[in-house]
Amino acid sequence: MATATIIDGKSFAARLRTGITAQITQLKADHGITPGLAVVLVGEDPASQIYVRNKGRQARETGMNSFEQRLPVTASQTELLACIAGLNQDPAVNGILVQLPLPKQINPEAVIEAIAVSKDVDGFHPLNAGLLAVGGAAMVPCTPLGCLMLLKDQLGDLAGKRAVVLGRSNIVGKPMAALLLREHCTVTMAHSRTRDLAAECRRAEIVVAAVGRPEMVKGDWLQPGATVIDVGINRLPTPDGKGRLVGDVEFASAVEVAGAITPVPGGVGPMTIACLLLNTLTAACRQHGIPVPEIKPAAE
Amino acid sequence: MATATIIDGKSFAARLRTGITAQITQLKADHGITPGLAVVLVGEDPASQIYVRNKGRQARETGMNSFEQRLPVTASQTELLACIAGLNQDPAVNGILVQLPLPKQINPEAVIEAIAVSKDVDGFHPLNAGLLAVGGAAMVPCTPLGCLMLLKDQLGDLAGKRAVVLGRSNIVGKPMAALLLREHCTVTMAHSRTRDLAAECRRAEIVVAAVGRPEMVKGDWLQPGATVIDVGINRLPTPDGKGRLVGDVEFASAVEVAGAITPVPGGVGPMTIACLLLNTLTAACRQHGIPVPEIKPAAE
Image 1 (cartoon, each protein chain N blue to C red):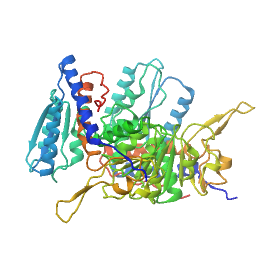
Image 2: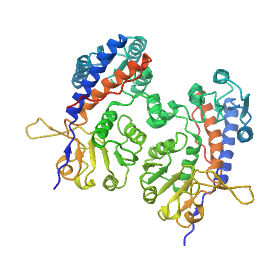
Image 3: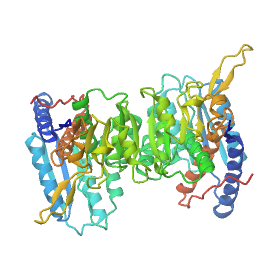
Image 4: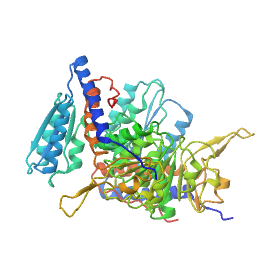
């Protein structure tokens, strides 16, 4: 049987970061501007600390300034909003990211809506969701933006292709559908209430799985040659207790049918932070009225 | 052959207005509040004048206050924005609608974005588009809201149904898809770049046609029993010069296959102004912190 092309998101993300680094060098040389990314962490959650550290490190590696604001787990919503207000005002800060999840006493919607729309590099503000929908200058959520870049790298022009998005979260599924529609795909949104998910998948040339259910999509759900983007990151228990990371797609069966597929890990995951850096660069350019450069990943 | 139920939008809209009238009476009695709708017309376009007059008359018939602001066709964008700023500030005005199209010297996006989000009863502000997408308290565009009401009246619970939306405009297609997704439909967005529109239609239990192409959707594009909502209003030339209104669906062939279908005229059209009044009532309640009543159309 045919075996799919494995889409190397880790390599693509590295090349994208190289492209971003080059543009930041240019931006400093031409305009004396160094983009700045501020990451806000409330509390001591170990996983969140790792994410925040990685974001800061990768930002600095591209030549950006990285700012980290830490608040105690007991911080009130008012304190967090005051922190965000300060970052909104700070001209050295072009992008603001509040690491989720937040402690229970804080309403995440209120926090997201407090971030200046132009600095909302996560693209979670409802105005950015609306600008994406209506075709304006949105900040686009990082994970679906990364998925789109992988798809375009793999397939070229997406116009007219039938795409199915499995899952309808605000941070992946819905913005992914909006992006694919913008690329002129025929887009189907499927989800937990869809009657026959397998049948919807089988019609699609592009499948984006973002449901958070380990290995739900089987090889026989796919049409031969489909391009499969697996956003899921699920940890399955193993006898040795270490666990095993799997996506929302059953890789072993899917790889025999698909034309191309992202692995987990090493597929979509590395694209998310790379697109966060891309969004920060975009935000810095827009805030300074500089045309946003088209970033190409560096050659392999 | 079977013949479809004809969905009587004109009657439904009339009963909806009766329900709105009752709620406005209640709102006056309980809270001393009379909702107010302001319609802004720039220039002398005859069709726009008719629309504006109808909106004002229907608003008054439900017991609302109706305000009309007229600017000359030569008005500058600055003048229009000043007019909107005044209406944004006016506590007697709960809903603001700027009649489109606008003269060439005025950028419609700038105008739409200047309307206070809470008074944007057309639901065209990108923040309202985003709130609809993420599940917040949006003002929903009137035409798709009307289509949804007709669908729920006809079909009851929509969860799990396969729906196709033909057309991806910001004022009908995209918000329609968001509404159907919120109702847990499996939603396909199809459009001019879709490779096989007929095949997409044939899979759907719900077809919403909003493409502006006269009689494009034929009966043999439909699955037997499908519910068809025809948003199109196109005027075809006739020998007598009066023209003939047709929808985006070829009614004569569709009515033989569909389970239910809206006629043109008398289907979706009358729902649009009724939903504008509904939005104005909703806006007034939200602005006063009063729970938004569930409006049911009056009994037949």
